[in-house]
Length: 97
Image (cartoon, rainbow, N blue to C red; front, side, top):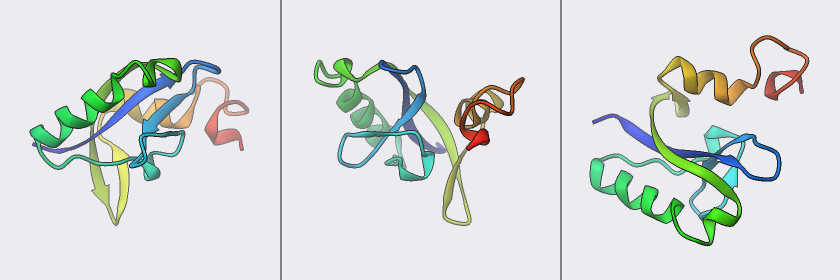
C-alpha cells in the first residue's frame, strides 16, 4: 500500500484541502497527516467524516501520495491539478500566488 492522505473541498470557497494532524484542514498538502497502512488510512477517513467536519468540508476521500525528499506529493494527475488550481488560467488558483 502506498501512503495516503485525506482530501476534501472546503465548503466556504470550494478549495481543495487536506486533513492535518490536529483534524484541521490546510490547502497545503505538505501539512497533511499521512497514513502508512490501510488501518491508519481508514481511521483518518473516519475522523474526516464526522458531523463536526461536515460543517467545514464536503466529500472527504483518501488519495495516494508519495514522499519525495520529505515532501508529500499526489501520485495521480487529477490530484496534482487539485493542489495547483485551475490549469487553464494560471493567473488563478494556488499557482498564481
